[in-house]
Image (cartoon, rainbow, N blue to C red; front, side, top):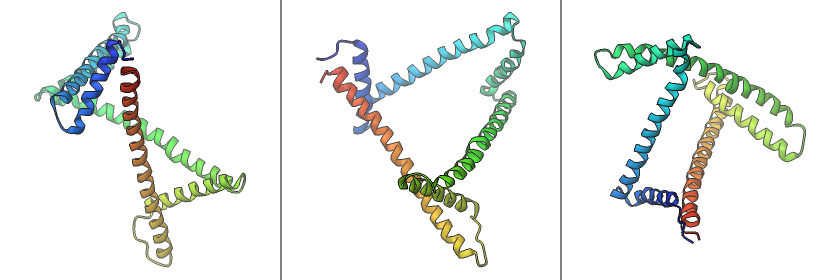
Length: 210
């Protein structure tokens, strides 16, 4: 039975408008695109106003005077729209980039570098225990990880007796990265196909009641 919920009809119409892009740009797709853009912008504006109210209301009540600093930096960032005073916006942007980069590097070292080193060490010990299938899986993960690391570290040509073995390992590391890129692309395609399947399921089940 076809749904009588008006929001289901709106969702179905917007979904059909989006799918019409498969046949090229057309008025239906532009309707869906403009509607989506307007909705996102309006939601962002309302959310931003609510955030300003909740964040800076304690400043005016005297509870958190330290909030004057982000308020000043936020006002300075608005001057980016005026060419004459755009230099004022460089200060909050520089602070934001500097703090963000510092926090990102700290988190990167803690999770990606140290975390991966600990994982490789622990998985190396797991190669010799457990069922054969688990041993094989840990062995592949350790070997692939080491191959990728060696490929990135020894990018400069090495002369001497170790040049040929290192070149073999670098070639193996290159194929490791190619396999990783292939798996990443495959996962991305699976995610997008899942979204398309979910949209078709909403059209057939929720809207048409099939």
